[in-house]
Length: 319
Image (cartoon, rainbow, N blue to C red; front, side, top):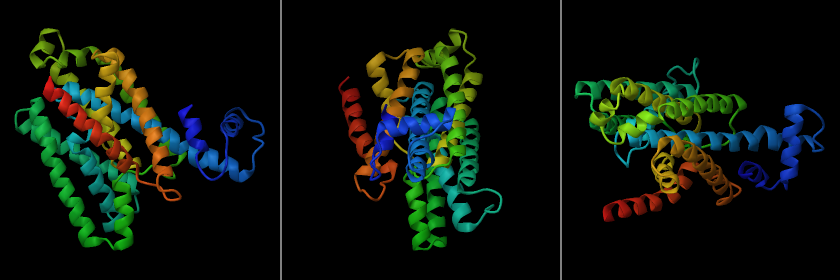
């Protein structure tokens, strides 16, 4: 219902019935009863954008929930591993320096950069002892390194127009996605959610520490590598398509726990729904607040996420 409503927002004057007729015609065949322009607005523009928003929101929220349990840190989120900063370096290297521009686009460069950043985090954490707190510290160090590299490339190689385009992408953008991007994100998100759901028992054990997980029969090293790899892959795909969208993976897991408790078998499906709903409505807000222009969705999530984050800090401090 939220996706159908999101598609109707705009100057075209479309209704939910128009959205349902267009979707039915493209899926099962038949006439839409709409003009070619109206059908293109629904099927080629707004529907993939809203579906991508739901997919990215669900994926980022699940990654945040898994990392907070795995690292035993309520402030962990998908970008704590330096993946977002690595993707930023890869994107600006393709766009501004022309590195691999004939082979991969900006999304491909972002994915390669995210993979390199995550590999560096794993290497640094392994050299430092391989514990979960070392993974967190390595992620912070890599984040700062790649953020500095991004700023250096933009400062030295970009003109005003290129800088504006890169910064808009870095702030998070769901505008004009292709169906192939939606399909790739949906497939990876589905795979990641299923792996995390199958590992819900291990995540419950990790909440009480590695020693407790070992005593309960969890293969700590294998489970940690699998879950870290899945969250890194999912975050890298989302960032390569939509840019850096913050606070989704940080705040929504806390909201899910407040609603249904800490058991991951129930909490993970809940956080999937909350993440999808949150980013769909954030996308609506981004299109409405500064209409006819579109506000980067990362700005919207930060406006909502920062107050929620402060409330979480205050409540945890009081406890």
